[in-house]
Length: 559
Image (cartoon, rainbow, N blue to C red):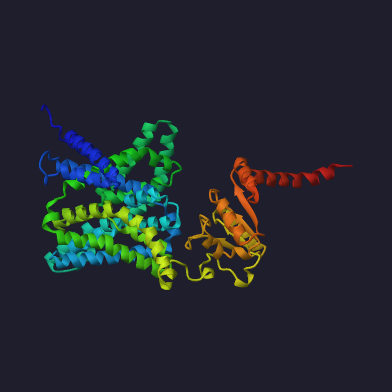
């Protein structure tokens, strides 16, 4: 050929086979990620036929890592994490510790070094956010309380892995220096120097980045050019990642993650996420393909016992650990089962960490192959675990008094999200929804010394107001309430709430919030109760203010 087309050949083979195997995985009702990994195996050096350029694939994978981490930062919500912090933070940290310990002990038994065993354990400890979100979306569980807890749990895991990616190179370098010179002081100094550089980068991003990047997006958006806007987003993601690596010796992953977090501060963050999505997904496919290229299928035949142990830690060990931890924190069995199934897989962070461990020379190539093979098995089995949640929950409820107690909260009054005097729990107002409207109503009720209870499934933050199940309204003592106030923005479950409330308390008054008149008419025609439309109430309030101010002036002007 007249010129080198290695890049074009690698892209064509990678994308083409990823499409074929991704479709095959989808037809088999498996996540497409499995297909992408298999596509990489097919063009890797371990299988016959065409072999892609590993050097080019590694660089393309690095871009994929940048854009993946940029997407994680762009969608990272501190508010979402804080809403489930009481279970997600301690639960995730404990689960990471247990899974890492299990992987570490297994690898040490196989004769690996301490650092290699530690990296292997960390690879097994973190689940894939991509796999989880797709599993939750397929079952319409993303907006449920259990789904929010699972996502928050994985956000904590992602943050821990970001920290690990930053510290691991310094730890390896410092450990080697300490061994060579016989002193651990060098190791401590190297770790401290790394933390200082990372802290300087984070401070720069928080002080300057959160002001510059949103303003930059606003300037570019004013041009009206979609191409320039998308170019701006991608340039910031890759430019910050590269600059962070060159100036602060920070990993590409951390730089891209913080670039995404700073972009989130902009009012155009949703557009930035939407416009960059095709490019992020395309390069994420290349990332998974490149990981597959490094996989040696012989590990399945040569080391079946080690592979079985690795899969067992991921699928059985992590699931059981998560279930026990969630139940120990006095959450319902259904929540424990959902979170357990959510964590029973590994994905993109595991691949990134395994690749880093291999490049640093602390983990053998066998370790990366074990991680990849176990990931394929775990992701394939993940759908089965999710499908087993409901049958398992029903079986537990039907077998034994102790087992049934696991599926229920202990004391309904102990679980109320606001402290309420039990003596006043007659004639109280039950408030569904604790957003801006709900909090304003609660403040007024408190000022008037009117007892109220917020009905909400999530005990960490009273936010979404999902009271469409009898248990939640029973916990709020709807049978003894005088009024039910539904202040949530979503009215899809309003009818069900009203039916449950009237079945438990036929005399209760119901007040509902609606967004517009058409919605209000539908609710009124169903006999839900009194329905208020926001814009009408605002107009009435403003009219009353105008009338109150003009009446005295009119009266004073009369003879």
